[in-house]
Amino acid sequence: MNVRNTSHLADLSPFELKDELIKLAGSDTNRLMLNAGRGNPNFLATIPRHGFWQLGLFAMIESERSFSYLAEGVGGFPRRIGIEERFDLFARINRDVPGVKFLSSAVSFVRDQLGLNGGDFIYEMCEGILACSYPVPDRMLRLTEKIVKQYIRKEMIGSHPFVGDFDLYAVEGGTAAMTYLFNSMKTNHLLKAGDVIALGKPIFTPYIEIPELSEYGLTELSIDADPAGGWQYSTKELDKLRDPKVKAFFLVNPSNPPSVRVSDESLEYLASIVKDRPDLILLTDDVYGTFADNFVSLFAMCPRNTLLVYSYSKYFGATGWRLGVIATHKSNVFDEKIAQLPQELKDGLNQRYASITTEPEKLPFIDRIVADSRTVALNHTAGLSTPQQVQMVLFSLFSLMDTAESYKNAMKRLIRRRKAALYRGMGAVPEAVDENVVDYYTLLDVEQMSRAVGPDFVKWLLASIQPHELLFRLAEEAGVVLLPGKGFGTVHPSGRVSLANLNEEDYVKIGRCVRELRDEYLERYQQLDSKNTQKS
Ligand SMILES: *Cc1c(COP(=O)(O)O)cnc(C)c1O
Image (tube, rainbow, N blue to C red; front, side):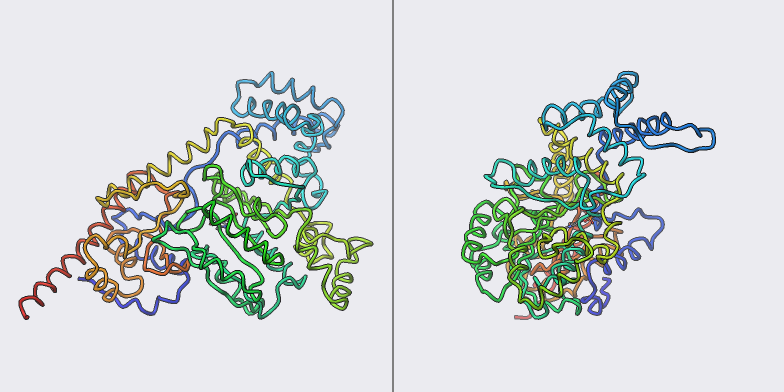
């Protein structure tokens, strides 16, 4: 059997390791590579994209009708007067074109359900899609923010009681949100070198790597989810947050990779800890929240303490669009902490932001993030490009208007079928579906998978395999790429299977390869075992 020495690979990050695995898996050109290492979905939301392109055509008509050098290729700005009537005419003429019905329903929804002015909305969208002006306001376009707020409210807060209002900053995806947040927290002395930050593990690897960057000099503390307890955080683990040395808690919810949302009980418990630790900073990355039913974000539970990050990348199959938001409640601990800084530090910050406002002391944290994203001096060019904001609005409206949740249900069906296929291939039954399981990813845990054989086999297997040996063998021998759960901070050796990016039959094949590999180790163990018995 093929046992390669893989110990030198133990320290690679999962994303570096993925490149190695892909090389191996692709080395046999007669074989199809099955790469289940990618979080990038292989589906995408079509209706709001059709809407985008049709809106673009309408906006072009608007631009050309206002100008007289058409032949030379010069257009003008859309005109606000009469735009609603012209849009209605466009929608009527093109009513059978895909995307047009969605657009006209969106205009009615914005007017009738959200109480906004239809003409102002069409005008903001036309200007935005033509991309002929800098984004103003820089944090987010005016009606765009109102509409996206409704979407965030529906998906992240739902029917949970929520007092007051919040602000949004539109950014280039969830990863940009993280970069901006870490940077502004440091600049504004919310986190400083030597501070302890807690990470809810397993977690998306950049969260493990960023705090270690010497630039930030933060000390990490793990809050480990319990695989035997459905990947929830026990009260004992969460109690680590009671230590006043812990300044912040970073959470991905639902998690990546186990893909489980924090249970209602744990959320309640977390909220009770925050009552005792009113200064604790919470950062929750809820990219996968939209795949869950009745999702409630930590932002809904502890709005004053929480920085919410949401991305459109996964749910709408839109990683290339780069769309995300940062949300902060209007009354929050970040602004309070800044107000309580020693005068000397405050003077420095007031100087830093003096070019933006005559009262820099009053500049909210979220607007400081916007300014810092363009090193303050270039603040007038800050903000997400306007066509990106238009697509974000159309994605948001698509979800808000889908009262039957047919898109969400289709997503869930798709993912569940793929998981069932994977387990069918393995000849196993997936564990009973727990209401918190989202299944965007599934973790194949070596210990869990071999437990049925017996504890001695588990012990032997864990002791005899090298780091990543199973993943390397799957790649080299079967062309199957999985990511190591360990790199995300899981305690046992495991492989992360993304259920988002391959077709159903591919998952059956992956399951079969995993099963064959396990059977081979089992055979080796049984041979050893019988030799040992003969000797004694
Ligand atoms: C995929 C993923 C993201 C994606 O961020 P984008 O920059 O929006 O593509 C963010 N957070 C987590 C936990 C993810 O898994």
